[in-house]
Length: 99
Image (cartoon, rainbow, N blue to C red; front, top):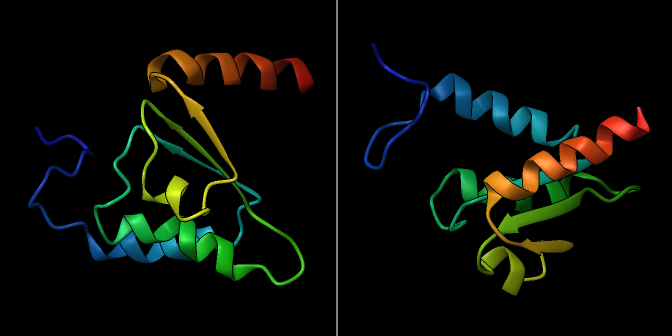
């Protein structure tokens, strides 16, 4: 049995990469969680999201223990420092209160 996780040195299925890039153009908010943001091609997705919209801005929220190149390059609008497994459930609870 194989999981849906792509490990280092494994190829990312072409259809997954294509669909991810297509969906990036539709997002209003992108969460970047627990990553070094240096593994390509997916490290480009936040940059693509920022460049897609002429009239509106995609908000990039980075959740990481440490800053990444996205933080340093000003791609991320917000950096929430901490463990993804701790922070994401808190975000989910806050969102549930609003819907």
